[in-house]
Each structure stands twice: as C-alpha cells, then as structure tokens.
Length: 91
Image (cartoon, rainbow, N blue to C red; front, top):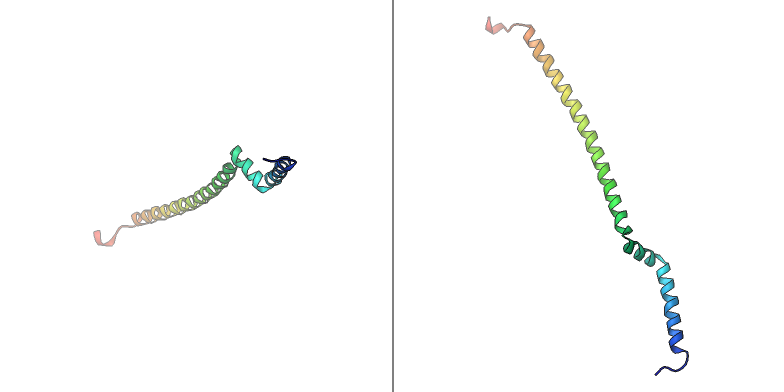
C-alpha cells in the first residue's frame, strides 16, 4: 500500500497542524469549555449586571420611602392644624 516516508510525514504534518490550531484561541476556548470556565465567566457577568440592577432598585426604593415619609408628615401637620381651629359651620 504505502511504501516509503508518506505515512510518517503525513502524521508529522497532522500533528504540527493540530499543535498550531490548539495553541491558538480555538484551543484556549476548547480548554475553557472542557474545564467549565467558559460558562462561569458569562454567569459572573450576568450576576454582576443583576447586582447592579438590584442596587439601583434599592436606591430608588429608598427615595420613594423618603418621599412617602415626607408626605405622611405633611398630612399629619395638616390634620393637627385643622384640629386646632374649630370649623365655622358646626357651631
């Protein structure tokens, strides 16, 4: 069938080609995928984005609570002022 250096040379060229391909970005991506690190990086980014959104929502909720407290204090003052003076129609 094959006589001479064809088979060993073919194997050598295939091995050298595989080394170049696997040492590049494709090889790193494949190694990360096998190790499970590729998903962790994407999940970490998603978690960081969600944490940022939660922090924003907490800030907004704090502002709403302050506004509600202010409105309640204003209403309580108005009720106190209204109770201090008798109404004219009920005398």
